[in-house]
Amino acid sequence: KYSHNPYQDFRDSMLEMIREKGLQQWCDLEELLFCYLSLNSPEHHEVIKQSFSDVWQDLGSSSARLV
Image 1: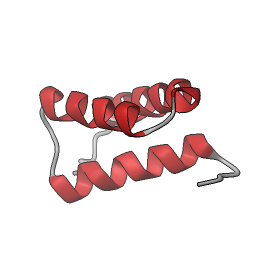
Image 2: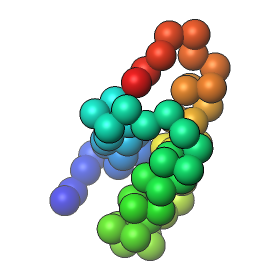
Image 3: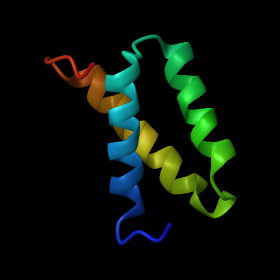
Image 4: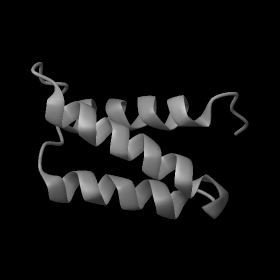
């Protein structure tokens, strides 16, 4: 799928999965990352890792729960 903003699309998708599945444990989040990496072309891996990193940082620094 073509995207004008793959970073935002991956980030939004990850947040949606985290909310829907109620993911809170590191092992679950790590599995989510590996799923994104395995399901997408290597050309997208850097933006996936950056999106995941930013989501992880937001989850850790947010006073409000995202899940």
